[in-house]
Length: 327
Image 1 (cartoon, rainbow, N blue to C red):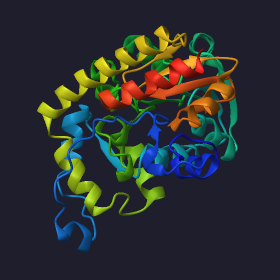
Image 2: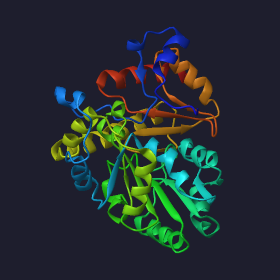
Image 3: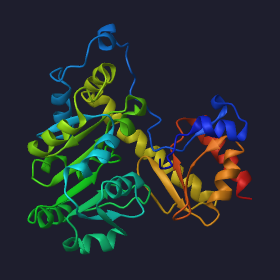
C-alpha cells in the first residue's frame, strides 16, 4: 500500500510521544469540522437505504445532475480503471499517487507529466486524470480549458477524470455541473471540506451509464447508515459552508505567511494546505516530529505538506517549533 498522511499512531510509537500530545498537520482534512449531532439508533440498526434523501442533497450541493455516493473517493479511484479496456492514461505529476497506482494495477499504460505538458499532449491519451486543485502541487485549471480537453478525449471515446477533493472552498471552479457529459468523471470528497474523514464518504458525478457500471462493481450499501445520516445534513447546511470557506482561506493564508516568515517559502498551496519543496525535507520532517508535530513527507520531489492548524494554540506551537528547527 502507498504511503499517506494521518499515520499518527505509527508516529507516536516511532517517536515515543503519546498520540494526544501531537499536532497532526499531515493530512489535508479541514480542522474546522462540521458539528456532528447525535446519531439515532436506527442509523446503526437498519441497513442503509438509497432513497433517504442523500442523493438529492448531494445533487443540490454539487450542482450535478447525477451522483453516486461511494466509500470515499478512494473507492472510485480504485474501481474506475476496471471499467475500461487497456488504455493510455495521462497522469498529473506530482499528484495524488493512488490514481497512477490504480490505473497501473488494472493493466493500463500510465505516463505521468507536469500539468503544462499533460494538457498539450492530450491527443496521445485515452484517459487524462487531473487533481484540481492539485495535491500537493496546487495547480489550478481554467474550466473552459478543461472542457476543451474533455471534448477532445470524448470524441474518441476517452475520459477526463477530475479529482476535486480540495475544491469545496472555491466551488465556482468545479466541473460538477458539466458532469452529465459522456466521458467526464468528477470525484468529490466529503471528508476534506467537512472535516469528516472518518465517515469515508465521497461522491462520483458522471453520466448515468458510467455511474450504473460503477454501482454494479461496488455493490450495495457503499455508505454506512450513520455516514448517510450525517452527510445529508452537512450537505444542506449552507450557513456553515459559507463560514467554513472563509475560515479555510484565512487559515491557509496565515499558514503560508508563517512558513515564509520562518524561511520555509511555500511552493504552492490550496485552502487546505501549504506545500514546501525542500532538499532537506526529510530532516525537517524528523525535527518537527521530535517536537510532536506531524507533517506529510514526500520523497519525489523532496517536500513537506503542512495541513492547517486548527486554533491559536496550534499556530503558536507550530511557530515555536519552526523557529527552533530553522535556526
